[in-house]
Length: 570
Image (cartoon, rainbow, N blue to C red; front, side):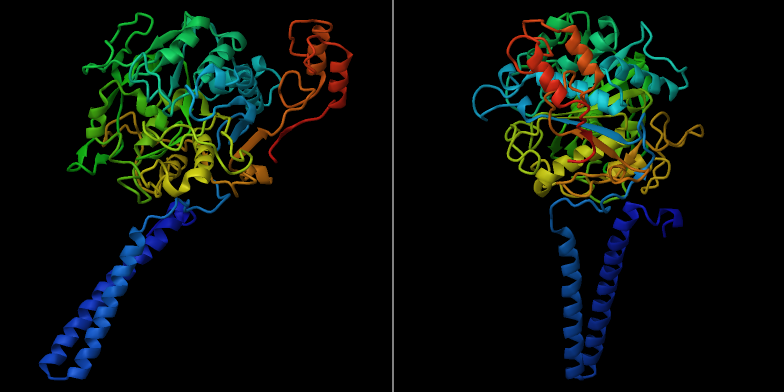
């Protein structure tokens, strides 16, 4: 029986009907056995009518028992077990539980067949830059990028036993991009992948707005290459950034490790390990071997998780938590064998209340525990992970309306951003998440992470020590989880006026007079226009696009004066 404090947990709400089904199954088997025993006894007594009735009852009971089992085995679209707007866990962030959503349909444009979707011709870099700038401001509530990044650093330091200070020169930042399809340097295809412009824009903000020296930033992908389509765009602007890539590809046909001195292999640490909080239940109950972590994450003072938003064939979804799978300094086959990658996924363990390896990754002090910002690349709508069939697809539900999602999600709450990303994906792909029919247990890792201090599975989550270590310390809640009310309104609990749960803030349409793209027309826009007054050659304040800043632009600004489009409502 569950503890009374867990009675309202979503996992317990799932467990109750499952438990009742199991009880019904046992009772059905028992009833069948009793009926058939009585039928045999009556046959021996030559009481054929009564024996026939008992046989009929036994067969009916057996049929009902089998039907219970078959109904449970029938795959159906993914439907979260917890009702809408039922938050669990403890919200994180300057504005607890806030997820910023930037959406602009003009950011992407691809006909679905010609050249590559990620090419510069199909992504408007200026719009993506505006979206990223808007998202970091909406997330923090600040009016400028400089102030927004300063607020992020200060909040992180305050919550990591540091002083109320922002970024200090010399501190290191590690960026973890999701480059799962970067199998070679010259890797050109249309498979699901991180949009190169996302990393370029992020580096611009870190260097130009946050004031981080290039040589203090490391882009680290220890399980894949950093392919040419991404590397050269970043290197052209930021040659002093450290770009480190896989340290394990040696198979024939792949590039030589260290072939490009500007993309050296990642060095693993021999001291800092990630330990797994459960035994390998798919392999004779043996402990899952610990893994070495990449040195850039161990040495970093701050981490930024730059992930992709897409379904996945075994995990159900790839979001910021799944992005940590690229942080192992070993060949992929090794961690597939020891269960850290596939065997504990919803595809193989669809039931709820399971140990989820993602929670260990989310809670490790050098991975999720060191992350100051989580970003989801939702510019292109990918239907699945992998190669064939993973090309972008347009989404049907509003506000996308048969267009690419053209979105960026950003949060300081690891659990909240994945909860929102999951809701976006399931609204489009719930019938067949990842193309492999994964429709159960997909959000179980979010339940476990939100309730890591008292999870439904009963797991003692501590990724810093081996199982049984007397010095183990259970993880605290890693963030807040809930599902939105519906795919049209997309409202979470804080959007509905409560003091708990997730808050989804977004700008739904551009204001013509919004010079600085913060979804507000105020004195900052007027100040920028004054600085650029009568300037030519395409300044930001040229709102009518005639080539200079004059009274016609001022009239546009005046028409939108004090309007605000930053809202939690559509």
